[in-house]
Image (cartoon, rainbow, N blue to C red; front, top):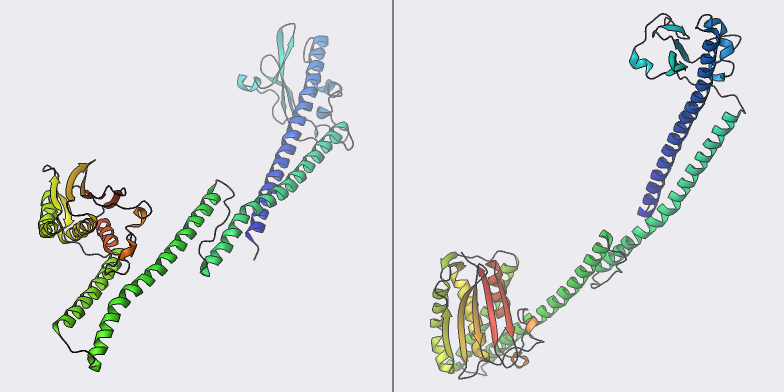
Length: 454
Protein backbone atom coordinates (compact mmCIF):
# COMPACT_ATOMS: atom_id res chain seq x y z
CA UNK A 1 0.00 0.00 0.00
CA UNK A 2 1.40 3.41 -0.92
CA UNK A 3 2.34 5.82 1.85
CA UNK A 4 0.34 8.97 2.52
CA UNK A 5 3.21 11.06 1.15
CA UNK A 6 3.10 9.15 -2.15
CA UNK A 7 -0.66 9.52 -2.37
CA UNK A 8 -0.48 13.24 -1.70
CA UNK A 9 2.32 13.65 -4.25
CA UNK A 10 0.31 11.81 -6.90
CA UNK A 11 -2.76 13.86 -6.02
CA UNK A 12 -0.85 17.13 -6.40
CA UNK A 13 0.64 15.85 -9.66
CA UNK A 14 -2.78 14.89 -10.99
CA UNK A 15 -4.21 18.29 -10.10
CA UNK A 16 -1.22 20.05 -11.64
CA UNK A 17 -1.28 18.01 -14.87
CA UNK A 18 -5.05 18.38 -15.19
CA UNK A 19 -4.83 22.12 -14.70
CA UNK A 20 -1.92 22.45 -17.13
CA UNK A 21 -3.72 20.41 -19.82
CA UNK A 22 -6.93 22.40 -19.41
CA UNK A 23 -5.03 25.67 -19.62
CA UNK A 24 -3.10 24.45 -22.67
CA UNK A 25 -6.28 23.39 -24.47
CA UNK A 26 -8.08 26.62 -23.63
CA UNK A 27 -5.10 28.77 -24.61
CA UNK A 28 -4.66 26.87 -27.88
CA UNK A 29 -8.33 27.12 -28.76
CA UNK A 30 -8.65 30.77 -27.82
CA UNK A 31 -5.44 31.60 -29.72
CA UNK A 32 -6.72 29.89 -32.86
CA UNK A 33 -10.07 31.63 -32.64
CA UNK A 34 -8.47 35.02 -32.01
CA UNK A 35 -6.02 34.45 -34.85
CA UNK A 36 -8.79 33.44 -37.27
CA UNK A 37 -10.84 36.46 -36.22
CA UNK A 38 -7.87 38.71 -36.78
CA UNK A 39 -7.25 37.30 -40.28
CA UNK A 40 -10.96 37.48 -41.07
CA UNK A 41 -11.20 41.12 -40.04
CA UNK A 42 -8.12 42.00 -42.03
CA UNK A 43 -9.33 40.25 -45.20
CA UNK A 44 -12.85 41.54 -44.69
CA UNK A 45 -11.50 45.10 -44.64
CA UNK A 46 -9.73 44.42 -47.96
CA UNK A 47 -12.94 43.02 -49.46
CA UNK A 48 -14.97 46.00 -48.18
CA UNK A 49 -12.51 48.38 -49.81
CA UNK A 50 -12.67 46.44 -53.12
CA UNK A 51 -16.50 46.39 -53.04
CA UNK A 52 -16.72 50.15 -52.40
CA UNK A 53 -14.23 50.76 -55.21
CA UNK A 54 -16.30 48.54 -57.53
CA UNK A 55 -19.48 50.51 -56.73
CA UNK A 56 -17.66 53.79 -57.20
CA UNK A 57 -16.37 52.76 -60.61
CA UNK A 58 -19.66 51.26 -61.84
CA UNK A 59 -22.23 53.41 -60.05
CA UNK A 60 -24.20 50.32 -59.01
CA UNK A 61 -23.89 46.64 -58.04
CA UNK A 62 -24.84 45.47 -61.54
CA UNK A 63 -22.58 42.70 -62.85
CA UNK A 64 -21.12 42.01 -59.41
CA UNK A 65 -21.46 38.19 -59.39
CA UNK A 66 -19.37 37.88 -62.53
CA UNK A 67 -16.67 40.21 -61.23
CA UNK A 68 -16.66 38.84 -57.68
CA UNK A 69 -13.74 36.38 -58.17
CA UNK A 70 -11.49 39.28 -59.12
CA UNK A 71 -12.59 41.26 -56.07
CA UNK A 72 -11.86 38.25 -53.82
CA UNK A 73 -8.38 37.71 -55.20
CA UNK A 74 -6.80 39.82 -52.47
CA UNK A 75 -8.71 37.91 -49.78
CA UNK A 76 -7.59 34.24 -49.65
CA UNK A 77 -10.26 33.31 -47.14
CA UNK A 78 -12.99 34.30 -49.56
CA UNK A 79 -11.29 33.14 -52.76
CA UNK A 80 -12.28 30.01 -54.70
CA UNK A 81 -10.31 27.27 -56.42
CA UNK A 82 -10.79 25.91 -59.96
CA UNK A 83 -12.52 22.73 -58.92
CA UNK A 84 -15.20 24.09 -56.59
CA UNK A 85 -15.64 27.80 -57.00
CA UNK A 86 -17.74 28.24 -53.86
CA UNK A 87 -16.48 25.50 -51.52
CA UNK A 88 -13.99 27.72 -49.66
CA UNK A 89 -16.18 30.80 -49.66
CA UNK A 90 -17.33 31.80 -46.21
CA UNK A 91 -21.00 32.53 -45.67
CA UNK A 92 -20.66 35.68 -47.75
CA UNK A 93 -23.65 37.91 -48.57
CA UNK A 94 -23.88 41.35 -50.15
CA UNK A 95 -26.97 43.36 -49.23
CA UNK A 96 -28.05 46.43 -51.17
CA UNK A 97 -29.10 49.76 -49.64
CA UNK A 98 -32.72 48.60 -49.75
CA UNK A 99 -31.77 45.64 -47.40
CA UNK A 100 -32.34 43.11 -50.25
CA UNK A 101 -29.66 40.43 -50.81
CA UNK A 102 -27.84 41.05 -54.10
CA UNK A 103 -25.39 38.17 -53.89
CA UNK A 104 -24.83 35.31 -51.44
CA UNK A 105 -22.67 32.20 -51.31
CA UNK A 106 -25.43 30.62 -49.22
CA UNK A 107 -28.34 28.97 -51.02
CA UNK A 108 -31.76 30.63 -51.36
CA UNK A 109 -30.64 34.01 -50.01
CA UNK A 110 -30.66 36.24 -53.12
CA UNK A 111 -33.71 38.52 -53.15
CA UNK A 112 -34.46 38.13 -49.45
CA UNK A 113 -34.93 41.21 -47.28
CA UNK A 114 -32.59 41.24 -44.25
CA UNK A 115 -33.68 42.56 -40.87
CA UNK A 116 -31.97 45.64 -39.46
CA UNK A 117 -30.84 43.70 -36.37
CA UNK A 118 -28.86 41.33 -38.61
CA UNK A 119 -27.38 44.15 -40.66
CA UNK A 120 -26.03 45.75 -37.46
CA UNK A 121 -23.72 42.73 -37.13
CA UNK A 122 -22.36 43.21 -40.69
CA UNK A 123 -19.89 45.66 -42.22
CA UNK A 124 -21.52 48.79 -43.66
CA UNK A 125 -20.35 49.83 -47.16
CA UNK A 126 -20.24 53.63 -47.35
CA UNK A 127 -19.37 56.00 -50.18
CA UNK A 128 -19.30 59.76 -49.70
CA UNK A 129 -21.16 59.44 -46.40
CA UNK A 130 -23.96 57.34 -47.96
CA UNK A 131 -24.61 53.68 -47.14
CA UNK A 132 -24.48 51.72 -50.38
CA UNK A 133 -24.90 48.29 -48.84
CA UNK A 134 -23.75 45.82 -46.23
CA UNK A 135 -21.35 42.91 -46.23
CA UNK A 136 -22.40 39.91 -44.10
CA UNK A 137 -19.79 37.26 -43.39
CA UNK A 138 -20.35 34.02 -41.50
CA UNK A 139 -16.89 32.76 -40.39
CA UNK A 140 -15.97 29.16 -41.16
CA UNK A 141 -13.01 26.97 -40.35
CA UNK A 142 -10.04 27.66 -42.51
CA UNK A 143 -7.51 25.16 -43.71
CA UNK A 144 -4.04 26.48 -43.04
CA UNK A 145 -1.49 26.25 -45.80
CA UNK A 146 1.46 24.15 -44.57
CA UNK A 147 4.56 26.21 -43.71
CA UNK A 148 2.67 29.44 -44.28
CA UNK A 149 3.28 32.35 -41.89
CA UNK A 150 -0.01 31.64 -40.17
CA UNK A 151 0.79 27.93 -39.81
CA UNK A 152 4.25 28.64 -38.40
CA UNK A 153 2.85 31.18 -35.93
CA UNK A 154 0.21 28.78 -34.62
CA UNK A 155 2.71 25.93 -34.37
CA UNK A 156 5.03 28.13 -32.30
CA UNK A 157 2.12 29.08 -30.01
CA UNK A 158 1.14 25.39 -29.60
CA UNK A 159 4.75 24.42 -28.88
CA UNK A 160 5.09 27.13 -26.24
CA UNK A 161 1.79 26.09 -24.68
CA UNK A 162 2.85 22.43 -24.53
CA UNK A 163 6.23 23.36 -23.02
CA UNK A 164 4.48 25.47 -20.39
CA UNK A 165 2.16 22.56 -19.55
CA UNK A 166 5.11 20.18 -19.12
CA UNK A 167 6.98 22.68 -16.92
CA UNK A 168 3.82 23.20 -14.83
CA UNK A 169 3.43 19.42 -14.40
CA UNK A 170 7.08 19.10 -13.35
CA UNK A 171 6.70 21.92 -10.84
CA UNK A 172 3.51 20.28 -9.50
CA UNK A 173 5.44 17.05 -9.00
CA UNK A 174 8.38 18.72 -7.21
CA UNK A 175 6.34 21.09 -5.07
CA UNK A 176 3.70 18.44 -4.37
CA UNK A 177 6.36 15.99 -3.21
CA UNK A 178 7.99 18.58 -0.97
CA UNK A 179 4.65 19.64 0.50
CA UNK A 180 3.57 16.02 1.02
CA UNK A 181 6.78 15.21 2.88
CA UNK A 182 6.34 18.31 5.04
CA UNK A 183 2.74 17.44 5.87
CA UNK A 184 3.44 13.79 6.62
CA UNK A 185 6.56 14.40 8.71
CA UNK A 186 4.46 15.56 11.65
CA UNK A 187 2.07 12.64 11.12
CA UNK A 188 4.97 10.18 11.14
CA UNK A 189 6.28 11.65 14.38
CA UNK A 190 2.79 11.46 15.90
CA UNK A 191 2.49 7.83 14.81
CA UNK A 192 5.84 6.93 16.37
CA UNK A 193 4.92 8.72 19.60
CA UNK A 194 1.53 6.96 19.67
CA UNK A 195 3.29 3.61 19.40
CA UNK A 196 5.51 4.59 22.34
CA UNK A 197 2.46 5.50 24.41
CA UNK A 198 0.78 2.23 23.46
CA UNK A 199 3.82 0.48 24.94
CA UNK A 200 3.30 2.32 28.21
CA UNK A 201 6.00 4.96 27.74
CA UNK A 202 3.95 8.01 28.65
CA UNK A 203 5.15 11.59 28.46
CA UNK A 204 6.44 11.30 24.87
CA UNK A 205 6.53 14.70 23.15
CA UNK A 206 6.57 15.65 19.47
CA UNK A 207 7.80 18.86 17.92
CA UNK A 208 5.12 21.40 16.99
CA UNK A 209 6.22 22.46 13.50
CA UNK A 210 3.37 24.72 12.43
CA UNK A 211 0.45 26.79 13.67
CA UNK A 212 -2.20 25.10 11.52
CA UNK A 213 -4.43 22.10 12.23
CA UNK A 214 -1.43 19.75 12.30
CA UNK A 215 0.27 22.03 14.83
CA UNK A 216 -2.88 22.02 16.97
CA UNK A 217 -2.97 18.22 16.74
CA UNK A 218 0.66 17.96 17.84
CA UNK A 219 0.08 20.37 20.75
CA UNK A 220 -3.02 18.44 21.83
CA UNK A 221 -1.07 15.19 21.62
CA UNK A 222 1.71 16.60 23.80
CA UNK A 223 -0.82 17.74 26.39
CA UNK A 224 -2.54 14.35 26.31
CA UNK A 225 0.80 12.59 26.74
CA UNK A 226 1.69 14.72 29.76
CA UNK A 227 -1.77 14.21 31.26
CA UNK A 228 -1.41 10.45 30.82
CA UNK A 229 1.99 10.52 32.48
CA UNK A 230 0.66 12.53 35.42
CA UNK A 231 -2.42 10.30 35.68
CA UNK A 232 -0.25 7.19 35.67
CA UNK A 233 2.02 8.59 38.36
CA UNK A 234 -1.03 9.62 40.40
CA UNK A 235 -2.55 6.16 40.01
CA UNK A 236 0.67 4.51 41.13
CA UNK A 237 0.95 6.85 44.09
CA UNK A 238 -2.71 6.33 44.95
CA UNK A 239 -2.28 2.55 44.81
CA UNK A 240 0.71 2.80 47.12
CA UNK A 241 -1.23 5.08 49.50
CA UNK A 242 -4.24 2.75 49.53
CA UNK A 243 -1.97 -0.21 50.28
CA UNK A 244 -0.32 1.79 53.06
CA UNK A 245 -3.61 2.91 54.60
CA UNK A 246 -5.04 -0.60 54.44
CA UNK A 247 -1.89 -2.22 55.77
CA UNK A 248 -1.82 -0.24 59.04
CA UNK A 249 -5.25 -1.30 60.44
CA UNK A 250 -4.91 -4.77 58.97
CA UNK A 251 -1.56 -5.20 60.72
CA UNK A 252 -3.14 -4.18 64.01
CA UNK A 253 -6.11 -6.51 63.54
CA UNK A 254 -3.88 -9.35 62.38
CA UNK A 255 -1.48 -8.91 65.32
CA UNK A 256 -4.17 -8.86 67.94
CA UNK A 257 -6.09 -11.73 66.32
CA UNK A 258 -2.94 -13.87 66.21
CA UNK A 259 -2.07 -13.07 69.83
CA UNK A 260 -5.60 -13.86 71.02
CA UNK A 261 -5.62 -17.06 68.97
CA UNK A 262 -2.27 -18.22 70.41
CA UNK A 263 -3.35 -17.36 73.92
CA UNK A 264 -0.59 -14.79 74.30
CA UNK A 265 -3.23 -12.16 75.13
CA UNK A 266 -6.39 -12.40 77.09
CA UNK A 267 -9.41 -10.60 75.74
CA UNK A 268 -10.39 -7.44 77.61
CA UNK A 269 -12.49 -4.33 76.89
CA UNK A 270 -9.41 -2.26 75.92
CA UNK A 271 -8.34 -4.78 73.26
CA UNK A 272 -11.89 -5.05 71.92
CA UNK A 273 -12.11 -1.25 71.69
CA UNK A 274 -8.89 -1.13 69.66
CA UNK A 275 -10.16 -3.87 67.34
CA UNK A 276 -13.44 -2.01 66.91
CA UNK A 277 -11.67 1.27 66.12
CA UNK A 278 -9.44 -0.33 63.51
CA UNK A 279 -12.42 -2.07 61.94
CA UNK A 280 -14.27 1.25 61.74
CA UNK A 281 -11.17 2.80 60.17
CA UNK A 282 -11.16 0.12 57.47
CA UNK A 283 -14.88 0.56 56.90
CA UNK A 284 -14.51 4.33 56.50
CA UNK A 285 -11.63 3.93 54.06
CA UNK A 286 -13.52 1.40 51.94
CA UNK A 287 -16.63 3.60 51.98
CA UNK A 288 -14.60 6.65 50.95
CA UNK A 289 -13.07 4.72 48.04
CA UNK A 290 -16.50 3.48 46.99
CA UNK A 291 -17.90 7.02 47.06
CA UNK A 292 -15.02 8.33 44.92
CA UNK A 293 -15.51 5.47 42.47
CA UNK A 294 -19.20 6.33 42.12
CA UNK A 295 -18.38 10.01 41.63
CA UNK A 296 -15.78 9.21 38.95
CA UNK A 297 -18.34 7.10 37.09
CA UNK A 298 -21.00 9.84 37.39
CA UNK A 299 -23.22 7.49 39.36
CA UNK A 300 -23.14 9.18 42.76
CA UNK A 301 -26.79 9.11 43.91
CA UNK A 302 -28.15 12.52 44.90
CA UNK A 303 -31.50 13.34 46.49
CA UNK A 304 -31.86 16.99 45.51
CA UNK A 305 -34.22 19.24 47.43
CA UNK A 306 -34.50 23.00 47.88
CA UNK A 307 -32.98 24.41 51.05
CA UNK A 308 -31.91 27.86 52.18
CA UNK A 309 -28.17 28.39 52.69
CA UNK A 310 -28.87 29.79 56.15
CA UNK A 311 -30.69 26.64 57.26
CA UNK A 312 -27.96 24.41 55.83
CA UNK A 313 -25.14 26.30 57.56
CA UNK A 314 -26.95 26.69 60.87
CA UNK A 315 -27.70 22.97 60.92
CA UNK A 316 -24.00 22.24 60.32
CA UNK A 317 -22.91 24.68 63.03
CA UNK A 318 -25.27 23.06 65.54
CA UNK A 319 -23.68 19.66 64.95
CA UNK A 320 -20.19 20.97 65.69
CA UNK A 321 -20.98 23.45 68.46
CA UNK A 322 -19.89 21.09 71.24
CA UNK A 323 -16.62 20.20 69.51
CA UNK A 324 -15.85 23.88 68.95
CA UNK A 325 -16.52 24.62 72.63
CA UNK A 326 -14.26 21.79 73.72
CA UNK A 327 -11.44 23.11 71.54
CA UNK A 328 -11.94 26.69 72.69
CA UNK A 329 -12.85 27.80 69.15
CA UNK A 330 -15.58 30.31 68.32
CA UNK A 331 -17.97 28.92 65.70
CA UNK A 332 -20.43 31.36 64.17
CA UNK A 333 -22.69 31.68 61.13
CA UNK A 334 -22.81 34.83 58.94
CA UNK A 335 -25.35 34.43 56.17
CA UNK A 336 -27.35 36.92 54.16
CA UNK A 337 -30.95 35.94 54.99
CA UNK A 338 -32.11 37.06 51.51
CA UNK A 339 -30.09 34.41 49.70
CA UNK A 340 -32.01 32.28 47.21
CA UNK A 341 -32.51 28.59 47.86
CA UNK A 342 -30.18 25.97 46.43
CA UNK A 343 -31.09 22.49 45.22
CA UNK A 344 -28.75 20.07 46.97
CA UNK A 345 -28.61 16.67 48.55
CA UNK A 346 -28.68 17.88 52.15
CA UNK A 347 -26.89 14.83 53.55
CA UNK A 348 -24.12 14.89 50.93
CA UNK A 349 -23.60 18.66 51.24
CA UNK A 350 -23.57 18.32 55.03
CA UNK A 351 -20.84 15.73 54.60
CA UNK A 352 -18.81 18.30 52.63
CA UNK A 353 -19.33 21.02 55.23
CA UNK A 354 -18.52 18.60 58.07
CA UNK A 355 -15.25 17.74 56.40
CA UNK A 356 -14.32 21.41 55.91
CA UNK A 357 -15.21 22.34 59.49
CA UNK A 358 -13.24 19.46 61.01
CA UNK A 359 -10.33 20.41 58.77
CA UNK A 360 -10.59 24.01 60.03
CA UNK A 361 -10.76 22.84 63.68
CA UNK A 362 -7.61 20.78 63.13
CA UNK A 363 -5.54 23.82 62.17
CA UNK A 364 -7.18 26.50 64.31
CA UNK A 365 -5.67 26.96 67.78
CA UNK A 366 -7.67 27.53 70.95
CA UNK A 367 -9.06 31.04 70.97
CA UNK A 368 -9.38 31.04 67.20
CA UNK A 369 -12.53 31.43 65.12
CA UNK A 370 -14.29 29.47 62.38
CA UNK A 371 -16.98 31.27 60.36
CA UNK A 372 -19.65 29.66 58.17
CA UNK A 373 -20.60 32.34 55.63
CA UNK A 374 -23.04 32.60 52.75
CA UNK A 375 -23.31 35.27 50.07
CA UNK A 376 -24.61 35.90 46.56
CA UNK A 377 -22.15 36.16 43.66
CA UNK A 378 -23.24 36.83 40.05
CA UNK A 379 -26.44 34.83 40.21
CA UNK A 380 -24.84 32.03 42.23
CA UNK A 381 -24.57 31.21 45.91
CA UNK A 382 -21.24 30.90 47.72
CA UNK A 383 -20.88 28.93 50.94
CA UNK A 384 -17.63 29.56 52.79
CA UNK A 385 -15.77 27.98 55.69
CA UNK A 386 -13.21 30.46 57.03
CA UNK A 387 -10.67 30.04 59.82
CA UNK A 388 -7.81 32.09 61.25
CA UNK A 389 -5.51 29.15 61.88
CA UNK A 390 -2.07 28.30 60.58
CA UNK A 391 -3.13 28.38 56.92
CA UNK A 392 -1.87 26.33 54.00
CA UNK A 393 1.61 26.62 52.51
CA UNK A 394 1.86 27.79 48.88
CA UNK A 395 3.43 24.50 47.76
CA UNK A 396 0.58 22.48 49.30
CA UNK A 397 -2.33 24.68 48.17
CA UNK A 398 -2.54 23.43 44.54
CA UNK A 399 -2.71 19.80 45.72
CA UNK A 400 -5.07 19.85 48.69
CA UNK A 401 -7.93 18.35 46.68
CA UNK A 402 -5.75 15.52 45.34
CA UNK A 403 -6.50 12.06 46.64
CA UNK A 404 -4.35 10.84 49.52
CA UNK A 405 -2.54 14.16 49.62
CA UNK A 406 -1.57 15.24 53.12
CA UNK A 407 -0.17 18.73 53.45
CA UNK A 408 0.85 18.09 57.04
CA UNK A 409 3.70 15.59 56.66
CA UNK A 410 3.48 14.79 60.37
CA UNK A 411 0.06 13.20 59.76
CA UNK A 412 1.26 10.66 57.20
CA UNK A 413 1.33 7.99 59.85
CA UNK A 414 -1.97 9.07 61.45
CA UNK A 415 -5.39 7.63 60.84
CA UNK A 416 -6.24 10.33 58.31
CA UNK A 417 -6.72 8.84 54.84
CA UNK A 418 -6.18 12.01 52.84
CA UNK A 419 -9.47 11.48 50.97
CA UNK A 420 -11.64 14.04 52.79
CA UNK A 421 -11.11 17.02 50.51
CA UNK A 422 -11.08 14.83 47.39
CA UNK A 423 -14.51 13.48 48.43
CA UNK A 424 -15.74 17.02 49.12
CA UNK A 425 -14.64 18.10 45.63
CA UNK A 426 -16.37 15.11 44.00
CA UNK A 427 -19.65 15.76 45.83
CA UNK A 428 -19.65 19.46 44.96
CA UNK A 429 -18.92 18.76 41.31
CA UNK A 430 -21.71 16.18 41.27
CA UNK A 431 -23.98 19.13 42.20
CA UNK A 432 -22.56 21.00 39.14
CA UNK A 433 -20.75 23.31 41.53
CA UNK A 434 -17.16 24.26 42.25
CA UNK A 435 -14.96 24.25 45.34
CA UNK A 436 -11.79 26.25 45.82
CA UNK A 437 -9.40 27.31 48.55
CA UNK A 438 -7.47 30.49 49.31
CA UNK A 439 -4.87 30.73 52.03
CA UNK A 440 -1.66 32.32 53.21
CA UNK A 441 0.60 30.79 55.86
CA UNK A 442 -0.28 32.09 59.32
CA UNK A 443 -3.41 33.88 58.10
CA UNK A 444 -5.90 31.03 57.99
CA UNK A 445 -7.75 29.50 55.05
CA UNK A 446 -11.03 30.03 53.23
CA UNK A 447 -12.83 27.21 51.40
CA UNK A 448 -15.54 28.38 48.98
CA UNK A 449 -18.34 26.24 47.57
CA UNK A 450 -20.08 27.83 44.56
CA UNK A 451 -23.56 26.50 43.69
CA UNK A 452 -26.26 27.48 41.22
CA UNK A 453 -29.12 29.36 42.82
CA UNK A 454 -32.28 27.44 42.43
